[in-house]
Amino acid sequence: MTETAHSPAEIRRPPRRGLAGVRLGSVAGFEISLDYSWFILFFLILATFTGAVFPASVPDLSRLEYLLMGVAGTLLFFSSLLLHELAHSFVARWKGIRIEGITLFIFGGMARTAREASTAGDEFLIAVVGPVTSFLLAAVFYGIAAASVRLGLGDPVSAVAAYLGLVNLALAIFNLLPGFPLDGGRLLRAAAWRVTGSLRGATRIASASGRFMGWAITALGVFSLFAGGGLIGGLWMIFIGWFLAQAARVSYQQLLLQEILSPLAARQAMSPQPETVPPDVSLEELVHDFFLRRPFSSFPVVEDGVIVGLVTLGQLKTLDRENWAHKRVSDIMSPVEETVIVGPDTPMSSVLSMMREGGSSRVLVATNGRLLGIISTSDITRWLDRVGLVE
Ligand SMILES: [Zn+2]
Image 1 (cartoon, rainbow, N blue to C red):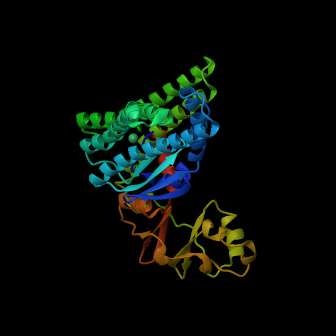
Image 2: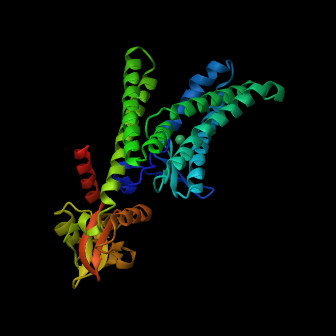
Image 3: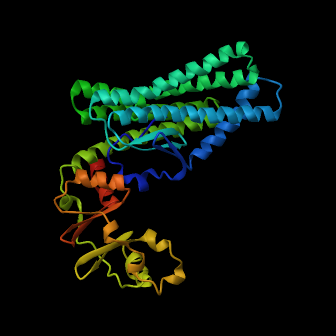
């Protein structure tokens, strides 16, 4: 797959995207992580390679040999995917765009960029290098398979290499489908952007094409189920088509959101006069009088009219229930120095990038330490719903 997250307004990432998983480490400064959903893909591919693909291509080997081929093939498959995403990441970094990380998940991989490309040309380069990398990998693997006899590599190695050639070829071609946010959809967007001069118009075209592509793949999946194609293959196409259609819709909405919010000041987007908590309240009271009675997951902590910190449901959950009676809000809150506070006239474009880069889901709006309002991911979600109504 591709990076679904070239879109700018990723502040909604924690609740919406739901990507959570295992950090693998970093390559050339890029953080690599595995989403929990990736493990499903891993075992599915390992099982397919070990149980079906390699026994069909090289008969009469032992179970252990098929397993070894399966493990090698699966690891090389994910390395190929990673190289595809790394290629996007290197070009994006070269074009001055920060990469927030590379995540492998159930539908493949994605490199999350901190912002949109500045020009259609940059967008084109960042998108095209992924499929180019996959084509090159296909050529390398096919080359190894073709030369395996001369190199004395044996049938198992040759079979694994040949299949990885095929997989990388398929990866390159699939990603070139002209539906946003696939690489091909990004190329389409870059072309439309160059022709029309409007990123928004170009994104609308590419997103419509992405939705169409998504539903077409879903329909093919349904057809293949009824036409007696494989159950897993059919279901897979339905899921991937649905995912693509959703991603195409959300990417466009996020771009609109960014465009609508960016010209506003913090005071126009905030929820004014939020409820606050005094620092000396016990955690028991905090739970019963605040969290259980209100739909909020955090409260600004205010003493004598001045902000002293922020307390969140997450901080409360780190503490055992028996400590609630004799601990106070001031014991667990994040102090004011660690809280993101902006002035009422701060442009929302800065607030959005602060939230994105700091990974914080709430920002306080204040003048001279006096609280005016709060901007949270749920406020932004509300804006997104309005955008959804407009569309
Ligand atoms: Zn890609």
